[in-house]
Length: 216
Image 1 (cartoon, helix red, strand yellow):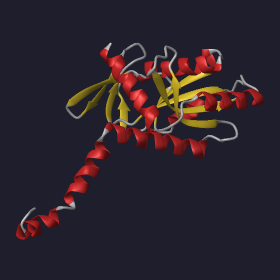
Image 2 (cartoon, helix red, strand yellow):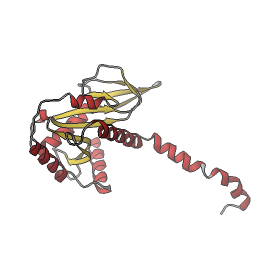
Image 3 (tube, one colour):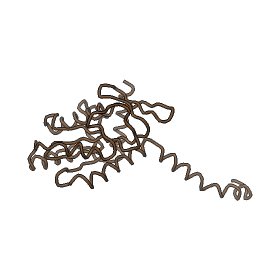
Image 4 (cartoon, one colour):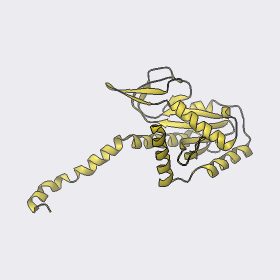
């Protein structure tokens, strides 16, 4: 136990530790990802009518090559008569370099560069998992990448790779009706029935699967 005089010296500094912890959490990729997903939800709530685009968030499905721990997590799905829109959220800063064919893209932040998985490839796995669950043509399931941070694209990106609320305009650009109202309701019900129950166990299973795949 600290002597009383030392305790009095360090007592004014005790508030610093929680602040340092909060700053560390705020800078973590996990927290930035959560912020990005929240922003997508807020923009969609304002700009995508819920009676036309049914939102389903944070969906975990068995992957198409499902093993005991092989799952895929989808940030956002919007089900509509114009198709399904699978939105992968990225909350990044700095310059972003990449194209459709590259396995990895590059984030350049100040003088440092970081590699991350091509989100289009990542979202392709999500689309395939949804296709397996719903048994519908893949062309009716559209991939959308939403960069929500202060990022600047330094290479030409496909139209479905967007910044800020640009993903809404891309989604609304689809005007051909491909599903009836009854089919939309049926697709929503299938997704809700097929998703794994949200919670710690599902997250643990997903993380375990990711680690196992990295070791392959």
